[in-house]
Image 1: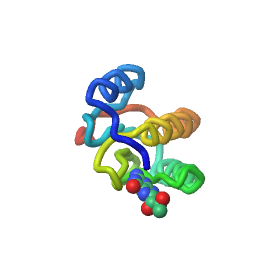
Image 2: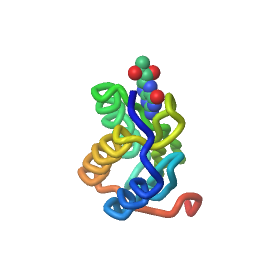
Image 3: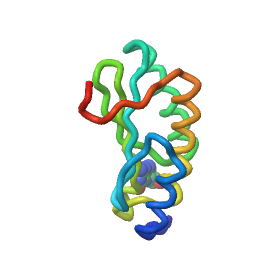
Image 4: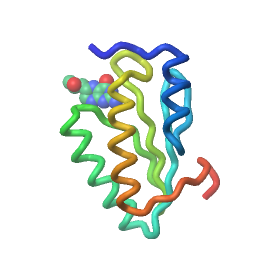
Length: 106
Ligand SMILES: C[C@H](O)[C@H](O)[C@H]1CNC2=NC(N)=NC(=O)C2=N1
C-alpha cells in the first residue's frame, strides 16, 4: 500500500508543480479550457490514465472549468501515486491548452 507523504515532502512537491496547491490531505489544480467539449475531452483522457494507473482523481466539472483533486483515499492523504497522477494530468492539460484559474473564480 502507498505510504502517506510527510508534510515537508508535499510542500516541496507543490513547489515544483505550478498550478497545484494543497496540503498533506490532498492536492488540487483548477484549469479552464476554451469550451465545455474541450474540458470533457480532458476528463475522458484523464479517465484513461486513471484506469491505467489504477488511481483516480476527484474531478469537479463546472462548464469549461475543471478542478482535479488528488489523494489516496485508502490511506487518507497524499502519496507518491498522487504525484504521478498529477504529473500525468499536467501533460493532458498542457496538450489541451488549459489555463490555470483560482478555484471559485469562474
Ligand atoms: C482496488 C483499487 O486499487 C482501489 O480501489 C483504488 C482505485 N483508485 C483509487 N484512487 C484513489 N485516488 N485512491 C484510492 O485509494 C484508490 N483505490
